Image 1 (tube, chains in turn blue, cyan):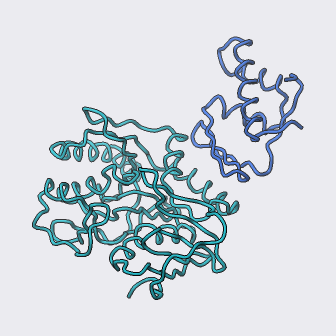
Image 2: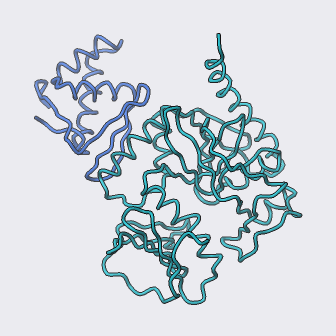
Length: 90
Length: 294
């Protein structure tokens, strides 16, 4: 994964915030997904068109966590979202 | 007046093509098959009846199999076809029983056999009123979500009926389906025939515990439970699914939802009623206080 990668949310994926979490629905497959607060924030930043690196910088400012651990979490979630077709590479 | 058209009985001929959706019983046997039809949808309950449902979910035709008991296919209409039809019409419909507490409605979401009817009957036998047995129908309004009253009857197993001291209660008659008998609303089982605001929901666990356990669910957890217990007629209708997704998201944010598990002992139902009522009162009280004039 390239830090400059920018992702997009396809039109067939809809998302709604519930409190500090997010639920997603892939309208093509009819599959639902849930994101915890950190995942929800990452998804929100993806929706704003931020690169992987920019997402990491934003979260570092918001969470007290080491950069290496944070970036591993970000990349793992992004990989999972891509594997399920919930985000795509622009 | 029967709320569906009844055609002459005929054998269930093979349907061209595989069903687009299926329900299976806990033992894995086919319970219902959903097919697309020229009129809209064909809901097949093997060995009992077919229901032809219009595309908009407003009209149904029942075609029973020869020899089918009328009470059996009427039960299938009430508990399966009608909820699917109401969902198609845009209502939110869930596998749940509902009782009235603190001037609001409390829903108990559960798969078949988990005890939601017994729980509703326990509240009713304790003086509360029930709104619905096997299907909770919600309408969304500016003030929130409200539950529409369902059929004024409860389906209970014989042991539940005896344990709740409802043996003297009249039965609605008809055959026993899935070892349950239908009890109409009456003095000992009062029915609330008016809509009530939904104030809380509980998702029933399997009962493998020794004590009553109640845990508040997060928004995502609640959403998953609402969707998992929802009646959905056309799982491939993207616009419908998107609208349903939006509504259930709002529901998950608006209504407190809890996981509830308890040992399935009739002797504990009184305590369980008390625990649920206390929690519901705690939800209702802040809402009431927020609306009191200062």
